[in-house]
Image (cartoon, rainbow, N blue to C red; front, side, top):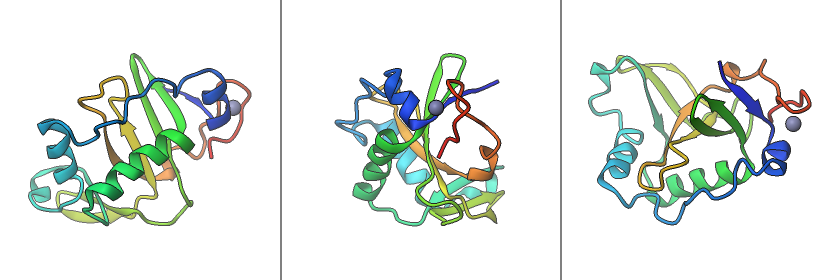
Length: 142
Ligand SMILES: [Zn+2]
């Protein structure tokens, strides 16, 4: 069961403070995640893979920074993810099921936010969050 906070309340509660984005592609793990989520290569052997339209490392890093600045927070157990919907319904890439395009995701998901050496991003569909509300005041999340 996840708990959500809208951008304003996440900021007010300090939930987005202290996330280290100084070197988003600094580790092999992060570079592998970037490569995976900017290429369809090998996706036919994976149940789900989301792929950004651009494979630019600068664009990917900017997506992570924009998500932390503008996004809403998802808390699940010890995990803190941050999600950003720049424009509902505007595709940022593709979601593949066993290599076959299944949907056009419009949401950036930043995960491993407490580990500077592992923080990375992938895509999801905002429809998965459209009925969720902020735990603080019931606000819409975007
Ligand atoms: Zn709120």
